[in-house]
Length: 238
Image (tube, rainbow, N blue to C red):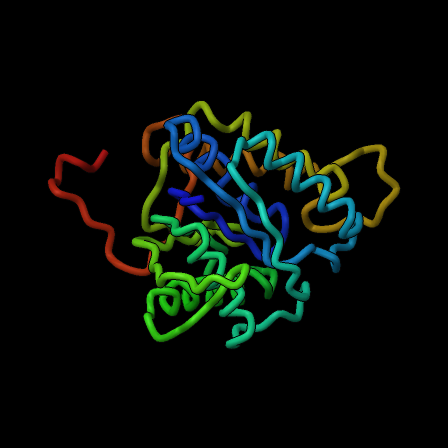
């Protein structure tokens, strides 16, 4: 299956939090989108790897993505080496996305920066003819995505491009809140974490509103890029 967009996150819920509204909008526009989770989130303070699996499946249904896979890398301890790159290259070549969305280049959680670099490097290496990978015994053809965009997470990094996602925030929030064990629940007896507070849940909407305000729309999501964004005309910019 060829995808238009492959969104990759170090943990289940990264993609939803960082780019859920963008994904919902592109799917509504007829684009095929898939999600790859690098780890099962097994080190998360709340919930378990099993509950995260169910929650990720529910979130995927809410967003309407075509496929979601988990590579089962070690939460907290995966590294950017040949072994992990080859596994990710297999996925990139399998789905042949035009665009890859991935973790923030710098963030509070160490897996986010590591995941960001791992994905970037794998996207480049995936285009090299002399790197051979196989799926189900078949040799894969090289493939390099045209664009790699990094969504913004905990830290308020300055975006290089901003996407108007007005009308798609409800879908994003529903997908995020599918992770019931992770986020604010006044009846929960589990340990509090930085993302389980009401303030964090509220921030999903108010950060998107603030970014939308800056581009004169209702809501927006921002991304950093690895190369200069280009337009055909100055009039293409909003």
